Length: 371
Image (cartoon, rainbow, N blue to C red; front, side):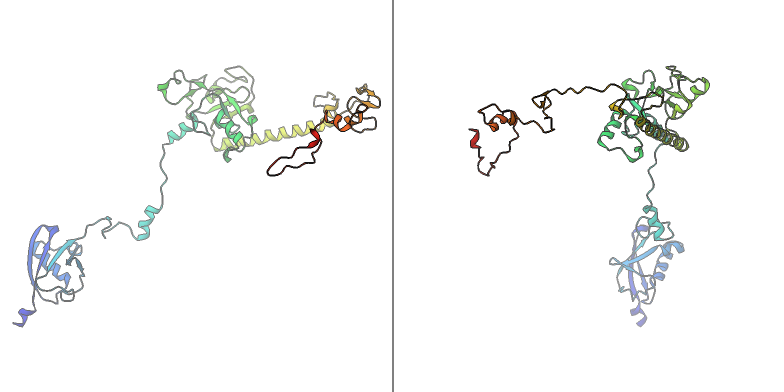
């Protein structure tokens, strides 16, 4: 009789298993884990992962596996719900596949760079202006490092002093070289898209796959293959002479850009030394080619040459330039006619007389002497 009163009768429902609610009679000292084992053993073969992934709730409250039925607050005729945890990292308490929380957070903390098609980057560098990123169109210029620009935005950036630091070596028009790019026939049509250029000798496309050189002497852009196959010291297009140092690599690699920068610095140093030498030779009156200079323009007075005759004509102790013989400046009042007021006479020729009257806030005082 006492044993019957100690047993509890409860109901268990399992919505995830899609089975009807079942009634169980159990003792109050039975653990929740054993309760799950006894219930699952009735419906299927017991699997350890199935027991560990399930949990029981009563009135929405989660029951711990280590607690007993009596300690969990389960009373007779209570309805318990059996649920299963979903595996995977869905934010529902399942496994995330990460060893720790730090590993899980680091997967999102490290921002991966956006992938860009290398072919698009290469075409953009060869077909667009290095400053404005607009399609190249004439007039086109190249700097001494091989960067291509549309001339108009580059000049505007120089005037507005908004040139990026990467192009700080460009100080003015002397640091630009006008180039001529040969367009592919039909590339100027609206349906062709971006403007494409080619080598005028070999017909190789100007797309970054081949090496091109700009000739500083004439500005024509030729492929490396054209310069190698047809060896000549003159341009293949305009037949103008050029030296090996006149070739500038278009969009070269890092090593080629370093060599171009060193060559640019050497040329600037030579130009600076040449200017200093001209200044020094200008003081002695001898130019680089041995021609002797003279005249006040170069700061040299030829004492052996004929002296210039002064063009001043003195009249009654005064010259026509307005200076007296003693060096004082001429005043109109000193030459006033007889019976004339000097101040009135001088006011005809000058308006530099300082007024002794001052303006007030409400009105403007007029000099009475003028009326």
